[in-house]
Image (cartoon, rainbow, N blue to C red):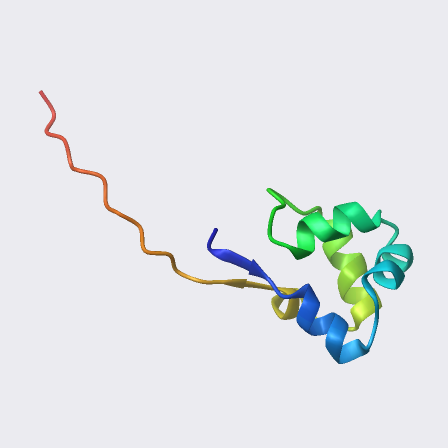
Length: 79
């Protein structure tokens, strides 16, 4: 997936554990792990805002886009 989650980086900078972050944000450690490990399909803005508040950072500090090598689909001709 081209969106990379850098929660680990911010946790290390803030010297905070996953459990403490989950508790302070108000989500389960399991759900935080899904997000942290890049397995989440979506994130609520309220959750993102809470993460930024607790970690004292901006959304761009937690999420970044990386281009993937995408194989182009063949172009089909209209009949």
